[in-house]
Length: 229
Ligand SMILES: Nc1ncnc2c1ncn2[C@@H]1O[C@H](COP(=O)(O)OP(=O)(O)OP(=O)(O)O)[C@@H](O)[C@H]1O
Ligand SMILES: [Mg+2]
Image (cartoon, rainbow, N blue to C red; front, side):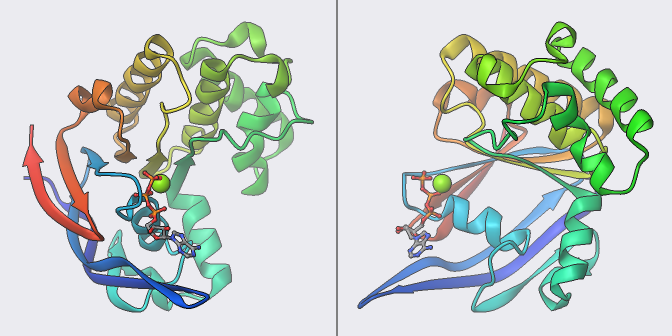
């Protein structure tokens, strides 16, 4: 069994919006192992996005703890959290979050330039990633002129360009057609194996379940079952 890279214990999160109280996470305990692709599945509203936001400290939670790479991130300052995420975690969202004014290549280079890598070197590394996602010919194209599947491949290249140990994907294939979805998952799986990363993929697209090493099922803010595939 590989080492535990993320360890969540009893995470509780309640949203208070107006009069209604939503118990979004009701005590989530989960270990994630190094180099695995863990899928997080469950009905809409069960707390998947809340959970991945909480575990990466993008969202504060009421109680519980989460250790990533041995570090308790909830106790870090905002600055430490940001730099910890920048160094160790890559994100791929349903909406690709690409910057419209930058080319595909510049979008991919962004995490590197933010981390202080010189522009020329960052662009060279970004070009390698663009090759890996088979979009070399689109280097100078802006996101608006790319298809949905192509934009998602650029977003994946950007999430992986700084070789983060952990990659979090929230519904990476839900705005894609079947074929583009399969291409994106193949790519995520391949890049994870090649880079030795650990991946958490939130999805309710049953067509991509086959790419999971383990599948955690959520319902009503709880993990009800973890399957090893
Ligand atoms: N900022 C917020 N304020 C109030 N309630 C929220 C907020 N964010 C999420 N919720 C509520 O928390 C619950 C869990 O939401 P969450 O977005 O985590 O679900 P999800 O499993 O990701 O759903 P989907 O599959 O539709 O993306 C829902 O009932 C949602 O309405
Ligand atoms: Mg969600």
